[in-house]
Length: 183
Image (tube, rainbow, N blue to C red; front, side, top):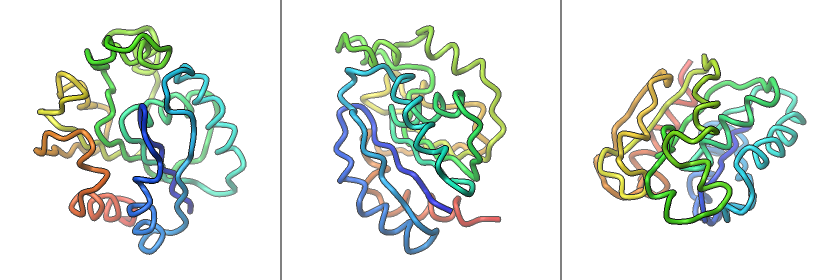
């Protein structure tokens, strides 16, 4: 079972290499999906492309979405029925972020609170085992509670007010591995 990792807005996918290696050792094959994170392409457009990529998988996948990458995952699963084992979101602005008003780009417009895009995602059914890691003091997803997602089967609070903390933290890496290996 392959685990796919998606970075967020303006991300550099190489920063997930340590996590990818840990997942590959403990969970199974892991890939970092490299896509244009500049925000110039709307999230739903990127998501359609990602759903095409996932359609080539022969068995269920695990998915990890960091920040905007989580919204790409949620949107991709709207477009195509992809067999998914488990999903983890890391500081994903499920309910938007006021910081998205700082950049007038197609993707950031979709991440604004109460955007049509976010409302359409919220109307989708969700019944996958999901770990949602969010930070009340996040300085990118503002206010931090907008990353809390009621549809997740498991919520974990990150007290470190650094948006990128789950990318680098051994603690959160272990939590992800435990989540993806539990029966």
